[in-house]
Length: 297
Length: 320
Image (cartoon, rainbow over all chains, first blue to last red; front, side):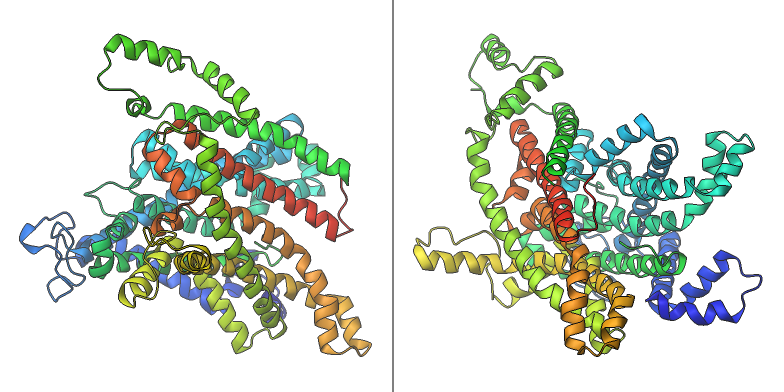
């Protein structure tokens, strides 16, 4: 996709363009990516301003008002305890988005650290880290996640940690491969000749050159975190009531009756997850094309 | 080539041991008493203690691990605490069900995805290409279990086209061909869900692999020497374009076999996924660890198979 878009920009104004500016200009041309970015910003704003948007408190129980279908008073009806579904949906976005962000953060920190050690130092450390990557790569995600959640008891923090710990190997692999190729370049040799130690070389000279794949991974990785939250909470192994998340709202659909009759309880959170992941995928794909056309899935 | 395969197989051993140690340690730290199902509640406290001592419930973890692994190597995976029968017997029944579903989904998704992706790559930026891309993005973004729930709600409940859950109608007494049709009917919805989900990734990957090949110099050469577009695409481009696709195909088989826990749970399909989930809920240690190891082994074998296939079809890959 990128090939057709690159040409006019490169020719237009070559002087004074930073790599970031070039990448951003390329990204701007990608309508889907911009759409994804806009939707994500809107979702983020909704999450932040949740108390201003919603009229009803998400935890407010009203047993006289169970299973109401959508109305002017309750835009998306009420659940089995008479709580307002719309409020729970908006507040739920806080949980889902923060799980996505924090779990990706954990994965990036672990993955980049171990990946750069493996790639830059090599030898025995490289071998051990890569075997660890092999081990983590073939863990069946949900089976492991449910086991750990059963071990520790369900909570939002546990989901963030599980999802982060289970998804760092991919970024570690990418970082290691990038570092292996950068290590051979002259400017690293120059830095070494100047007497810098490995830590400074990695942080100041190597990592800035591999920002692009890290950013792409982090964007797409958020989708994984949100999906993990939705799946785990759906199975009753995630965010606990009364706190609401898109995943534990979807849990309503595990009751055959609600699945059949009370669509407003589980279809809206499902659609929210879908829209969020779709936007992340659009943006991530656009970023990949814009930052580094060589990169592929 | 043989050396390469043997070396790859040898590397698997430490990886498998690593996985089993981690899983073993995790599972044995789970709270709850798995033995409460096993022991007659009328027994006295002392009898209970001696029984637990006899089956090794109080052994330290490394001893337990040693006992387990030395039996597992001989194919004895222990005794399910919940189902009161050997784990291997339960697995034999369940693995077939999961294989049936995932292999069918695998074949179906490959048969649909590859032609669609090839056509869409040859008509880049056309409406067809656009539709395929959007479809792929939807498949990549929709949570499989949510898609499954929508299917159950609309196709099974509202329209009544398909059964809601299970693998066959219990108590129908169907035999032979009728039983087969009954299973097929139950299989339809989970099959649609799994196919659609794995279709999406396959389609995107094949499309970009084809696009890359189509921009190569030798394709221009083939066109320049006057070959018809059909020969250029289906003889020169397709063969090269499908090489990387083999990798993602093998990986997606591993994913289908090991990743169906949520889809199987929604459809109450009696496969490995529901088995693993139930086992975790029941604290059925021998069953959890066996399921997890099988899932891990499946992914490992799929990766290995991908690498070997890759080395076979692409002579440029060196084996060392």
